[in-house]
Image 1 (tube, rainbow, N blue to C red):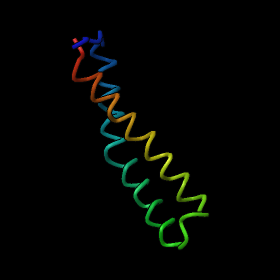
Image 2: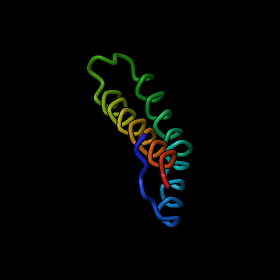
Image 3: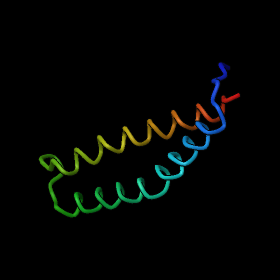
Length: 73
């Protein structure tokens, strides 16, 4: 396991961002997906495809932050 040097202030900011992403950001994205799905045909639904792409980035950032905080010294 590789440890990452994070100062307390930086760790606090990362934790804050992680809480935001896991809470309000996920909720907003879920609402966007529900709205896009309610519009019907997903194959040509740009809102749906953009929301799914954003979801991938969001989940990737959550994983990255969790890794950084888990391996912080």
